[in-house]
Image (cartoon, rainbow, N blue to C red; front, side, top):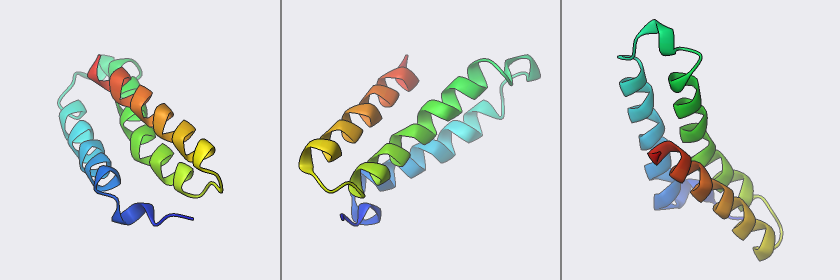
Length: 78
């Protein structure tokens, strides 16, 4: 098992989540269940998948969760 909290990418992911929540708090209420929800879920998915992958026993599984995190990052960027 890897100590994901020591990974700079996980730490940066947590900072990104905080920034996304700050930005989406400025969105109109009409976006609460639309864009705001999608952005926050994608942002949270990034460090969450890094952490979950770190708990996996094989390098193959770890890589798969990192790929999912990367996909969430692309989703958020879009």
